[in-house]
Image 1 (cartoon, helix red, strand yellow):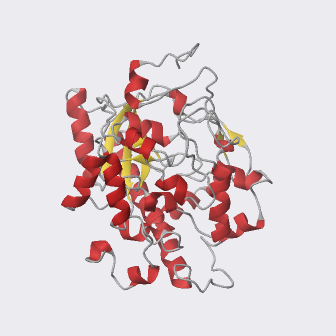
Image 2: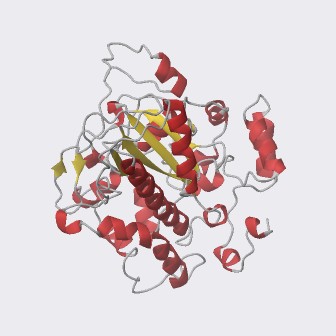
Length: 399
């Protein structure tokens, strides 16, 4: 890992929009706000315990409001089911694969390595195979220890664990799964959580299948989702998108409406380059996410290295979200919140010409015009969940 004696930014980091300060420290998974909700009494409350319980057991009294009925929770939990099966399969070994630990569900690596041609040819093949498995987006980044968790953490035994990714895995394949546009439009709701669950369930299928394909070729490959490392920096270096004010990756194809997975491998593959399509400049102007956040967890000021609590990484100049406030709202409403994603002007169905026009305007000096049009046309407003159940969403022909 490079030593940072001053604020000099490398060419590679500059291309990705990274600005690390001399006091940068790698992140400890124990400090992730979701991990803290299992051991930190300031985060672990009756509300947070009920929040997790609703993903497994029905609430004793269902909320009689739009988007929080038993049917809404039933769909959300069903969408998580495939991901949950993998996560819970090795709990007797103190593992929650995909969220605290990387996956270990593979067949052995083939003894003979197959030549896939040049690194560029190999990268093209991996992307083709990954998309055939269902990846919506896929890119490749070089391994960077700065984004690896310094330690892992077990929710069950409440102990730190060593990093298990072996040395010599030089590349990280990053995949993105798009979340359903209409489901996200119903936020805040339990129903909208189905989009998150489906994203992770699809993600598990893709990263496990692609990792096993690489192992069948004779190379090491380890699949990972929300565990092991920070996914957003790798996704940016893999050319999948830019970092946004709301603290998420913003892709050109789906905006911030994606879930990320990654595969660590020693297969010789060419890395991608970061892309720019105007997100930083647009977010400098736009405040839709910070104004829409019900608990003011998203900053409205310029990027800085300010942190709110231990759930923020130290020494990175960026927009930083207050995870404690964010998770507190999740727990209070008994479902995950994606209001910031819903209201983001990049959250669009880009199969339509006029949304692609808006995306282009966002990357130009006419971005303020795009913002006014976005508001005037009602983009980002909440769609009642009952409309989704009736099949009246935008992707079903409504607006």
